[in-house]
Length: 198
Image 1 (cartoon, rainbow, N blue to C red):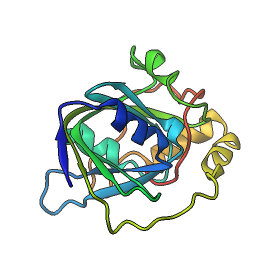
Image 2: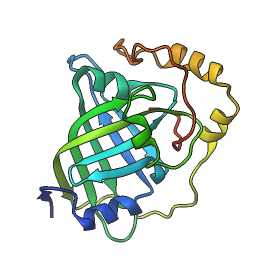
Image 3: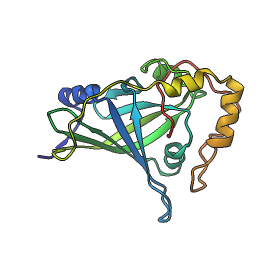
Image 4: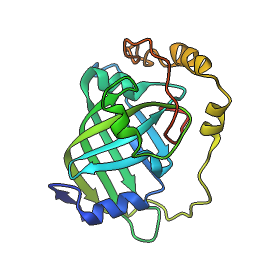
């Protein structure tokens, strides 16, 4: 059944690498605030930095809940689950930080991901608790293909259009928390897979 780990073992890293998708959950501090849960596709958007640190590529999408929540309180949970014959769920509980393109750490992180046209930030997570569980009720399914619709959407936008989109759609969370950092630098393209609700 369930087990706790001090760090991401080679077996857990292999499980993560084989996962076709993962889930990200965050929440504001306010009791009336909405919990956000986002599915993430494209495993070239996720990387293990060391035994207790992971990161994923955050792409421009229709919302910015994760960024707003992390800027307020840093709490984040990542979940991987098996849809194959061997059932398993892996949860990573930790504290997250958004690294934006104007951060000195950006260049050292962005090369760890696949190439995508609309990177918004890199979410770096300091993992504080690593736990797996059985996943006995998760259905067994087959992956047909990954979607590339978000990449195609981004390829058809100029940098100015992407910046305007983020001002309009990504400035605040649905609960009104600020999501955009105070910067004027336009979005830099060059890496990262896609997704439409982040």
